Length: 225
Image 1 (cartoon, rainbow, N blue to C red):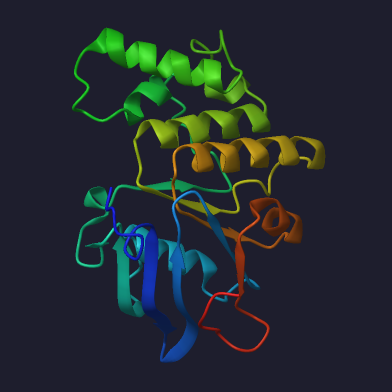
Image 2: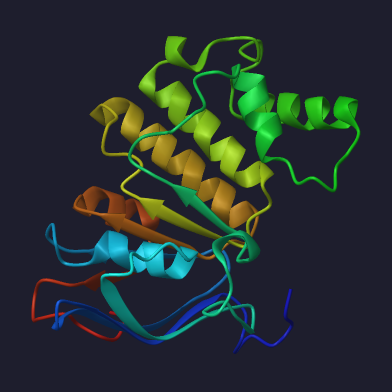
């Protein structure tokens, strides 16, 4: 990690996204380690495309300018697999042909070569998620909340340096949503990850407790509120 507080965290430096000649959004912001920036806006405002740009998956029909810096490193020219960005989506996207434990083991970096160690790390992640004994289960047999917890642990096991959340709580019922949301934000704070959350839900923004960037109040916006 970079020691200079001016360069740590995730920096969106004069980022602008265009589609078909139309400006969708502008943002210029720094997300400190362990904090959350919430981006809110209507469908089509460019929220998910912003995450795609940061992660390195932006579709070629979009035009982007500006830079993405992570702990002082310019990610903009790098392919997605070299950016060390963790992603969570509305759907947990667990691999259906793998057990829960195998899903977790898949995410562990290849530098951890010993199979028994990889199994231990995956099992510990299950224990941390309150899912002890679920390792041999088919992901399809888990509830929505359980699947989301597995997806979170799989994302963290990949040792990301920042976390992007694309409405990962929206498919959960209200009671479960608050619990899972707390687990995600607590885990990010513990690991000192800068987090960018995209959501329609104001309760998500309040729970995140950080800055809120609204795209649809007065045009595409730019700075962080």
